Amino acid sequence: MKRSKLEMYVDILKVLAKSGPLQLTHIMYQANVDCIILKEHLGFLIKQGLIEEIVMEKNSQVYANTNRGTTVIRFFNKLNKILPVKGEDKFLPVSY
Image (cartoon, rainbow, N blue to C red; front, side):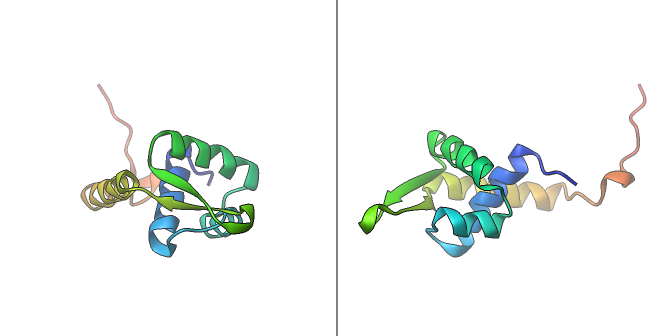
């Protein structure tokens, strides 16, 4: 099943929360996101203030969660506990 953008954003934030600052390729493999798409998502997350790009020596970059990004992960973890997804086939159609 294809993940939504929101699911990919949360997966990226979770990877960075678990593993600390990472280079692009490490995020790509751990979050299972294509490189081109990952670059777009990282740009969005940076603009939202959820992650930051840190320039290391030899012109390499790593990415890390900001405090705001950590808060978002906590929010989604709480939401998942309150509203766990048990499978799409278990949802019943809503009748009005």
